[in-house]
Length: 201
Image (cartoon, rainbow, N blue to C red; front, top):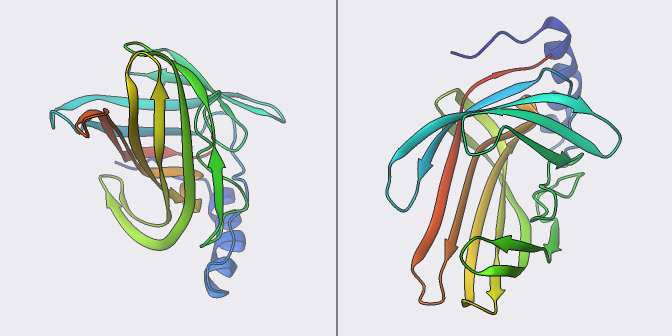
């Protein structure tokens, strides 16, 4: 069940989101995330198709550059994001303001448990507005496509594909898919997150 959204939040969204749609849904600004905002996701392993434990992200602290979250479920108790919801030392999920056709690139270096130091080169593009249905309901969202390659001296070169469905109404993605393929083209790791509940302050 979706938790109730405050009257102030509804009025804010009515003022900010509705005009954007009326003008062709051309641009989306950095979300006004607040301490206490939370999002719960149904999590599926794309390789085994197994449903994993739900994962809830709760905003615990915000400053000019960082969003800190506490996490219920999953392998770690907390995670820090950049102010634009990009992961630290990871792929740049978004490039606000968002609009259809916008492109950018990420070139992160990170540690992989099996392959050691790994470098990726990922191209991103805001593809389109579309309605996406998840357990929490149906939302108007921007689909953002990421694709590219990863390279690690121990393992070789593979490719990766990521998709975000970012919904301004909930200040975060409502759906997310991440697939990593090994040098033989086989799916090595893959996850899907689908919003099942949220609460905005």
